[in-house]
Image (cartoon, rainbow, N blue to C red; front, side, top):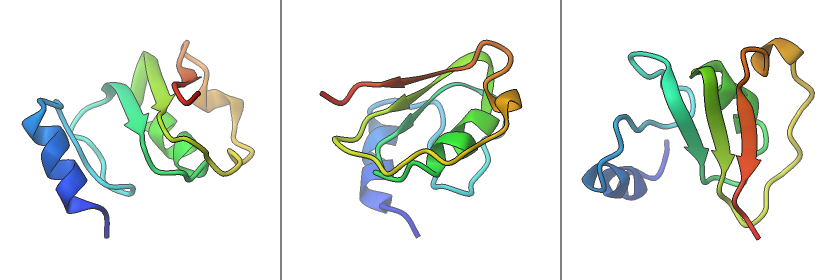
Length: 84
């Protein structure tokens, strides 16, 4: 179960698609923003981002990103952090 209030807020702000971990979007995303502190979500987000897309890690801290196949980054996908 995820944070329904945060998801509702994101939808009010105009996100094209919002879901919880384990939910798949109807089509590949241009970008995914991870606000949870769980590094294991990074490979999952990369799986649903289109070629050339971005995964943005927006938490103040995050657990380690697990080892993952290089193929998830292939296709010019990128990972960025906006935490300072």
